[in-house]
Image 1: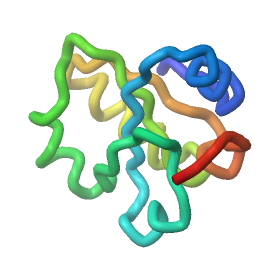
Image 2 (image 1 turned 90 degrees about the vertical axis):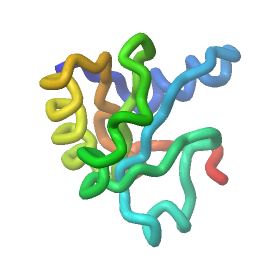
Image 3 (image 1 turned 120 degrees about the horizontal axis):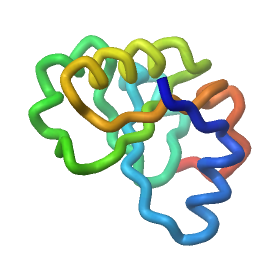
Length: 98
């Protein structure tokens, strides 16, 4: 499983890179703050909404601590998606939130 740290992702965003970030936390968790531009697809709905994702793009999976996003990463990889897990999740995120 490919992984990046929160700091690596924040550095890429600060440098102006466009990243496809999927936040797999529940809606009430996301309401407390998410990475700007992230798309919320709760882990329990991922199987039903993965058709919204483009296999040609790379996605960065995010959750609270990195566990659920790790599950999401493995799940999507098994279907041929290009995905990366953000280690440490939002607990490790020090960048801006919306």
